[in-house]
Length: 221
Image (cartoon, rainbow, N blue to C red; front, side, top):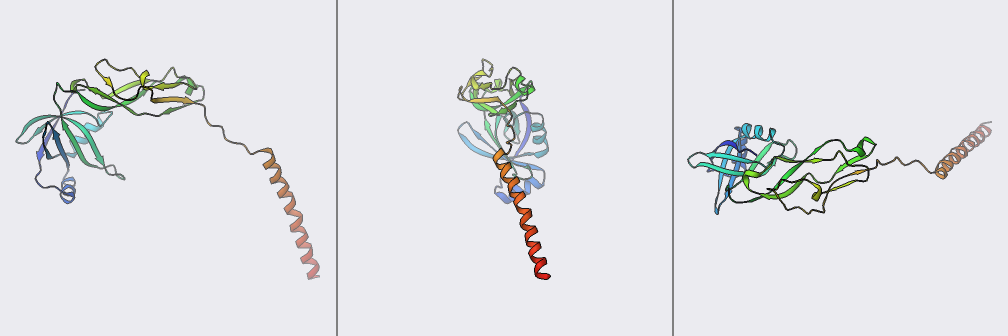
C-alpha cells in the first residue's frame, strides 16, 4: 500500500464545541499518538480526507502527514468516527509508525467470483469482512481477495483457506468461518390440517349468519 500525503495543523483548542466549529469550517479534528510521546491534537482538510477514503477499500491505511511546524510523520489510520445518521466525518485517530516495526491491523476481505453454489440457487453467507494480521507498515495491503467461485452449496471457507502473502502474519483464528454457501430457505406452506380447519370454520360461519337473519325477520313479522 502506498503512503498518502496529508497536510495537518496543530489545534490548541479542544472540546466538542470547538470540534463542531472546525467541522463547519471544513476541517476534521484528529489526534496523532505513539512512539511514547504525548498525543498531538490536529486538524485536517475534511475534503482531502474524504477523497482518501473514497479511493481505498478500507479505512485502515498508511498516510504521510506534514504537520505544520513539526515536519513529516508516518501514521496509520486507526479509527474514523462517523455520525451514526448522516455518516459525516467527526474525528480521526492516527498512530505513528516506524518502517522497521511491525503493526497489527485489520485488513478488509474482498470477495471475488461468483460461487458455483450461488449459480445453483444457493445463498452466499459472508460471516467475516476482515481479518487481523501483523506486518511491517510497508507491507500493508488495502484488501485481501477471497475467491469463492469454487464454493458449492454446503461449502465452508475458513480463515486458514484465505491465501496470505508470506509477509503477513495471521492473527485471526484460522478455524473461524469466513463464508459459506447455504440452501435458500423455502417458504413454509400451511399444514393440510390448518387448511381444513380454516375451511370448516368458514363453512360453519355462513349458516349462523343466515339463522340470525331468519330470527330477525320472524320477530319483525
